[in-house]
Length: 147
Image 1: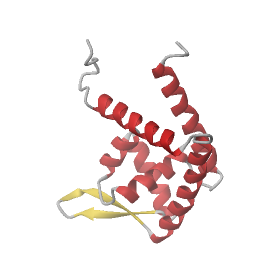
Image 2: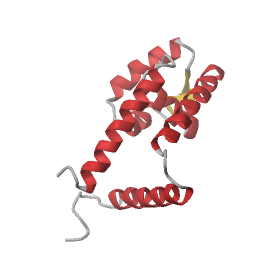
Image 3: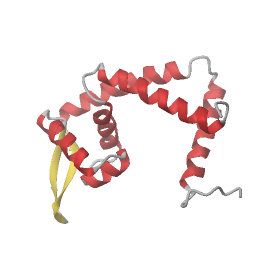
Image 4: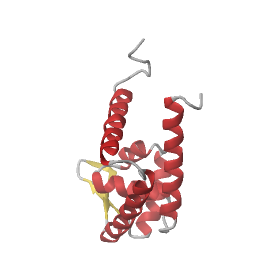
């Protein structure tokens, strides 16, 4: 099993998450907070349920995390004009500086991860991983399309 593609991919993802955690902790934030900031940078102005789903955490967990981040002036909640009960999340000016630090840590992590790869190998890896994502995203019931 240790030589299987799924195992290697899963183990690589585990190691990548662990190293990401170490690097963002050195910046003084948790990996969940860093992931939320990066997600908000790409998709601002969604409700908290959207971000909880994308981060694969419970809504109450996200709510508590956002409470702490709002107190630290890293995120801002705004009323949703179309739903008075919902709150939309946005970045603050302070969080944009944090995102720059997170992105720099990510650049170094990616350089480490791809040490020894040629440009062509990096492109091949990206293409293959994109295909894996598409394949996994297109299986609605988890069954293989190959029988």
